[in-house]
Length: 430
Ligand code: FAD
Image 1 (cartoon, protein in one colour):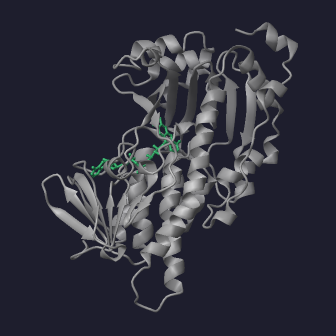
Image 2 (image 1 turned 90 degrees about the horizontal axis):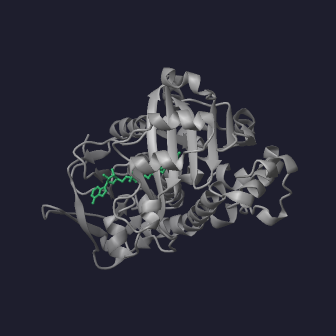
């Protein structure tokens, strides 16, 4: 049933971050209201990779079986060179599941969003659409809570307001005031019937990433294998030249000229009526401003190269809800949530983890998009990595830390200059 009167928490934004957090907090018995700007709850885009650090949380929520039914659990994650299609590294996702206890899977983003929407409805979350929040304000000392103002001038108050309003967050603008950072890269997406790509040399059971000079291309099956997801990402010359209208379809075709056959056959299938200019923000240390908390992309929008953006948002809500549960377990029955303590604990652990993902995603992008000798050095290093060492996945795919001392050490890759390039490869250098 919809919440009567003042909720415990107002969440602004009903994306994957807002809805998953609403569900996590509703499970703790709190009254949650979600305010979404759009006329309907939904997601645009196509596939989403969800790694074991996310499927572990879905399992705890009782939502993993539903996600597996709607998604696909691929067999391998394979990285290839986009020019000569040589294999660089292969992760056996069965081994990965054995290591982390939970699967690496892919799902249509609207399916994952719908899973959380249904879960929120069942948990009694008050879900309201057509609500554009234009302002945020703390009410006196933190105990007073916070107030939001809607576009029509109405206001609402709660002990806690969570801003999960995405990359272009109004709350982030007001409280931090930093700018988004353009990467000059743009993403094209497509989800097509599997029959449209069967003859393209695809690996239906794998997640494949082709990395190439100033571009990369991702492929995997979706919806029980009936659909095939493709993401094409490239650096826009128009963006580099400072033009407004950058990342247009003519640039897509030019960027992938000279790539291997499978990539070349995939490019004509990309959706051409919509593209995503890739932006992130610099990491920030403060996500909590009184009783206004930033969460998900509003707090830490990444470049998507680690495929952890939606996952970080889901982890944020889980961490906050675990701290609520922990603090309540130690408090007198019926007492109010100690939000100051819960928010401090949330910020203490999440800021550093997400900073690592954001900075690694930028570095990962640079590594993927290398050209010339550096490309060959990268390939040599990638081929030399033993995936069974797990040093480069443990800090991401292991259990989500609740306290800073649980955060595993970060993986530090070996320097490019240490690579030994094989002679036959140097010969095919571009
Ligand atoms: P959003 O999804 O942006 O949701 C914000 C919500 O707030 C929206 O519903 C919006 O309408 C609403 N809103 C905004 N302003 C207001 C307002 N003023 N008032 C009320 N409501 C408002 N992540 C992964 O984990 N795995 C992947 O494989 C992956 N692949 C990606 C591929 C691409 C090409 C891209 C672009 C991203 C990818 N990501 C991936 C990242 C992921 O999509 C985002 O990090 C994630 O969706 C962020 O969720 P969010 O809920 O924080 O923000």
